[in-house]
Image 1 (cartoon, rainbow, N blue to C red):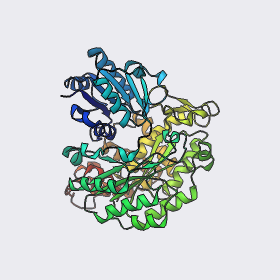
Image 2: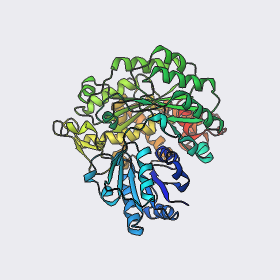
Image 3: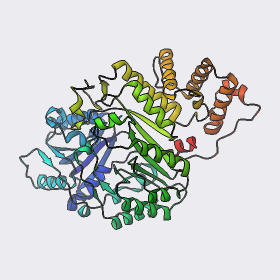
Image 4: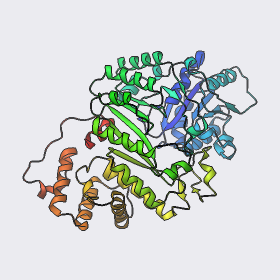
Length: 505
């Protein structure tokens, strides 16, 4: 009998919901009376509701995040119109703060704030006994991690083979960066290490090759991070991929030595730099040593095969377009394979809201609540930077133009040159999205030639990039730059999580 449906709307099918699996694993005797229903935000609410109600549940638990809040509200509205007697319970960061302003909260029956494994199980047990707690908003608290059941058996064979599988060694963050909800929970808790490594071993035995850690501060505890790296290093095999989020200015010798021993591309570090302006970092309570960040990123690039995915944020209080550009150029000079440029979001409950008046921070009223303007960035400048982020992803991060892209900023500011290309694309095409690779290559070719780069040099670089990454898609207009070389056929296929790394190499 299925009486509990655990549901959410993922951004993409490939993302397997970790939160739902944590909840189901901890339902105790009710676990066998539950089922997971995962949708994606591109689906119609009617279709997801149909799949949920096909199980005839008494309780529906729905995970709500900033990226699915709008679609989740539509889903809850649909569920309550079709089956008003079904109890809808919300959970997730989007509905853990500022509840009174949210229509989805008014539509639902209950909300579990924070970590929900224990509180949700207790609520379901009461509801299935016919008891309706009077309190609609329940606090999940901080359950002892050693007492929680493992979520990893909840991943099935299809998940392990085809989807992003999330794991965690710790919860919480000791830092207080005001743009992040982790600033509200400075207590860091770790899972029992021996048990955790045993669970990772079981996942490896079931065929999992890609582990994505959700820890906010993987390298905070040297003992834990060393043990995990040593565990995977001893079991390293072709196709393995490990993703960690790293504190950028903390890289002791013991971790350096271990990271240098991994095969190229096996480890990916997500390094949240966010800003290299020390005044901006201080303003948002971000404790970061910019010199140590530069030293660590440079060392990792020069001495390891680790893939570095770095992050910068547009729109932090007091940071201007020129200031952001200086930080971007400084980070690019350190050589990370990727720089993801994100737009500041005012997440519900995040302390960044304290700057709204002083820095005239204006945000969109709908999810994901991205900044629209500040006292240092006009709306027009934010829009330019939004397009810059998209073009940088296409030209810089994708790896499709590894030889050609540097021609844009040869002896110049990469930020200014890519921003100029973005402006030119927008002026010509009216958009920087939905541009085919062939068209993008042609526009890049023409833009570089207009900048004064020799036509033959640009053509040879573009032809080489296509022959390296997509030889079967080399544009016809590049044929004259082939130097008589026959077009090569691409051999083999790479797992999607490794494609971008391979292009960058």
